[in-house]
Structure formats: structure tokens, C-alpha cells
Length: 196
Ligand code: IMP
Image (tube, rainbow, N blue to C red; front, side, top):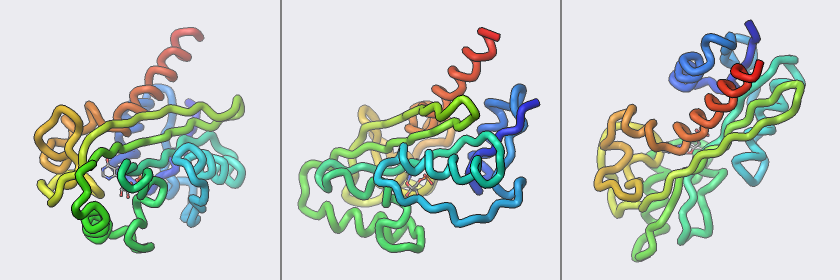
């Protein structure tokens, strides 16, 4: 069985990928390979950051790697917070502070259009393979819902009336940026398996 590292410390993301690739790959997390490096995310695109993470792991640990980067782009803010989504209000990764700052920046702004975007990369000896996902929606004027994480309480997907934080995990994953990128990776692996 091929070993692959998913460059994440998030056990939910790891479990999800194991469910998807489990038959073909032994999927490990960063902890499993003894990596607690503070991997730099200094690129100015999601794709660039995902590749930086995957290259860091492959170069130092010699294993194939999957990495992802995601965030929120708000049209009226010129695409911010974008790659700075996790640390919009400062380095603490504090979702409440990030959401409050977002609402302040959008005070009095009528155009609330935004999207979540994910770039996922599979880096192997044959090079990087990229998979993308995005979901369009609008930013509310006040948070709603207790589920999800990050900007979920402020984000209503196009065609929905509830926020991602008011939806169940399954309902969110069926349409979300991450769900789309992971599904594209899954199709790629399946098509490779078929042509073997
Ligand atoms: P990550 O790359 O998945 O860790 O996401 C980086 C940051 O983007 C998170 O810390 C959140 O602030 C934001 N973000 C990414 N995906 C989502 C989502 O599905 N819901 C809410 N916020 C998200």
C-alpha cells in the first residue's frame, strides 16, 4: 500500500481523506511522520500555499503529500481576506475576531458577494496535480448558527437561506469548496485505478 501524508493537523480532515483514499493509500497526518514544523504559508495564492506545504513535506520527509489551502474572498474588499483568512484580525487564528473585523469592513456596503475557495494539491514523483473548489454566496450583516467553523456563521451560499453554520456537516460538504476539491481528487484517483 502506498503511503501518503496529508499535510494537516486537523483530525477531521484526515479522517475524511482516509475514507476516500483508504483502499489505495495509507494516509498519515503530519504528527504520524513526526512533523510539527511551522510550515511557511507565504504565497499570495491558495494554490501557491498548498504547493509550498506539500513541497516542504516531500523535500524533508521524502513522502508523497496532499496539502490544501482555503479561504474567503470578498468582492467589495478586493478579494480579501483571501490567503490571510485564518489571520485576518491578527496572528491568533481567532474566528470571532476575524468575523467581527469582516463585518466592520463591510459596514454600509451593499455588495456582499463572496466565495470560499480551496486549492488542493497531490504532490508525487510525477509532479503536482491540482484540484479546485469554490462556492459563491453572500456575507450577512450579523452571524447566524453554531455549527461549522471560521466564517461559516456569516456565509449564505447562493440559493440558500441559511448560513453554513446553520447547516449540517453533510449538507455543507455536499456543496462546499473543500467538498468539491476532495471530490475532484477522488475522481482522479479512481480514474488512475481504472486505467491500471
Ligand atoms: P484552511 O486552509 O482550511 O485551514 O482555511 C484557512 C482559513 O480560511 C480558516 O481558518 C477559515 O478562517 C477560512 N475558511 C476556510 N474554509 C472555511 C469554511 O469552510 N468555512 C469557514 N471558514 C473557512
